[in-house]
Image 1 (cartoon, rainbow, N blue to C red):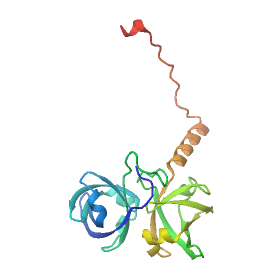
Image 2: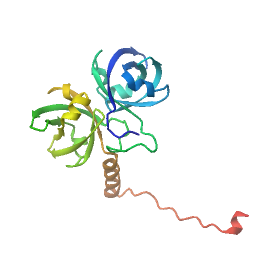
Image 3: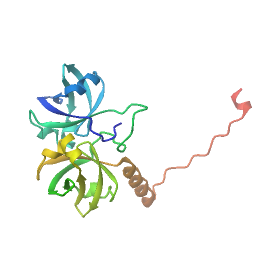
Image 4: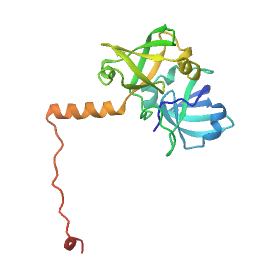
Length: 216
């Protein structure tokens, strides 16, 4: 589980395709000191498992399902990626619940400069648009952001100078792809409402009766 608060920006060191998918190596900089094999790391919002650590370079195996659902196949050597380690008990929770399971890919449709930073307009599928609300949370390349406005096939978010300088969104231009994960709370609400409207309610089970005699 993650929070969408980016801890560092790494760089793609190697991309090696294989029969299972690909092996991705990231130069994680000083954050690598906190990563060990088997640890979960969110890379552009994608939860991956570290399989090897060599100095500041950490390697991850990526299966075909992940490749098909994300923009990993578009990464290039030297490209910057957002990094976040899995949250640990007792740590501050500053963003929102982020699973690291990408729901789909969005496309940057507009990037407008403002006095406070930028307004980013993202084009997304109708399926994703139906799961988000104004002022709700969404993870864009792993970054926890608040939705400003919502249209039929687009939504907007605001990027403050800190976000621009501490993530990879500052370098992304119109036409670039981003990984999107909608708020998990919205997913559950939608699932419950769809189940209720279809009349496919889960069966109710009677509460088992327990007595002292039955346990002896």
